[in-house]
Length: 58
Image (cartoon, helix red, strand yellow):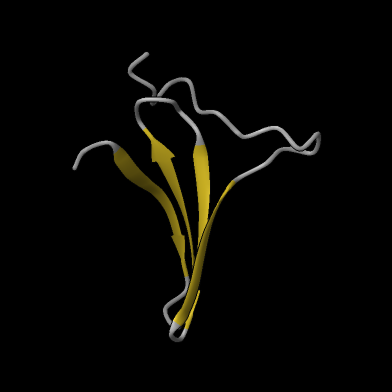
């Protein structure tokens, strides 16, 4: 259960969060609005996944 860490949160009804996979360092964007929600890898301007190496165990 410690694999993913929430590093950012904004909002209450419309929520935006950033989660980091501590094994790979990949950042994910989570968005919730009411009963609808979605999760996707966070991408940089070149379309590559954002990786946080300082949080990764590898």
